[in-house]
Amino acid sequence: MLGVLARGISGLKILGNLLVPDAEDLRRILRVGLPAALEGFTLWTGQWLFLEIISNLGTRDDGSAFKAAHMIGMDAEALTYLPAMAWGYAAASLVGQSLGANNPQRARAVTNAAGRHAIVIALVGTLVYLFGADLIYRVMSQEVPVRAIGAPALRFLSWYQVPLALVIVYLQAIRGAGDTRAVLLINFVGFYCIRLPIAWLMGIHLELGLIGAWSGMSIDVLCRAIATGLYFARGKWAQTKL
Image 1 (tube, rainbow, N blue to C red):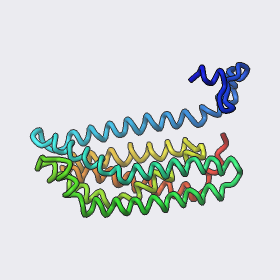
Image 2 (cartoon, one colour):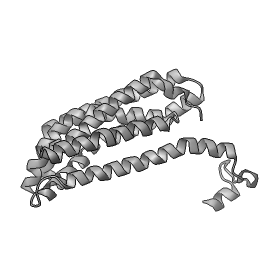
Image 3 (cartoon, one colour):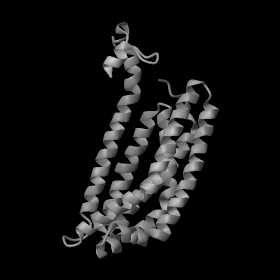
Image 4 (cartoon, rainbow, N blue to C red):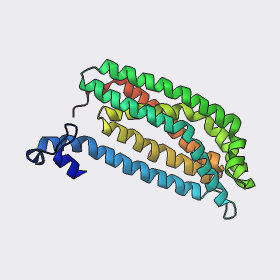
């Protein structure tokens, strides 16, 4: 790759005088990149801790069934969150383009359009999980305990698909504006102050099983969706200086 760029291709070519780092460029990159990197670490650690809670559900005899039911549910939920991520990436790109053109109204409009599209996808997911939970688990597992644990939990999970899609799209849009610190704060509070404590309380302490643990996840997503919507409505993200 470096060899091709050294020779030049399609107007792209490495120029020696531009290889010296520019302090101002580095500062701008780090201003956006460091919070984004910390957010990624925060989300990875939070997901790992959440899986630890899932791993401690039930007893020694049926604990593996809870983990299997959880993993199947998360795989099935890709029907919602993967398209939402795609619309979120599109919104982030167009927000950056619009703000670069000094057109915050367009940035807001394209984000809202992506959000509306994501709602349609989320509603489809809601119907699939609500009415197809038993079929999904019959196809994905031959273990009766896994089906008995997972199908009711997936039907419960169907009700938070719209907030999930919206939080993905709008956080991506805010990230596209370069306001990575706000995204970091929202995700950190959601995971560590809401999801993990409630999941432990309801799933393990109150012994409500997978539905209890997923309640923490659902409440977290709902709270982050509300916080993200309020922050987006305020419009401070559109004034981010890079």
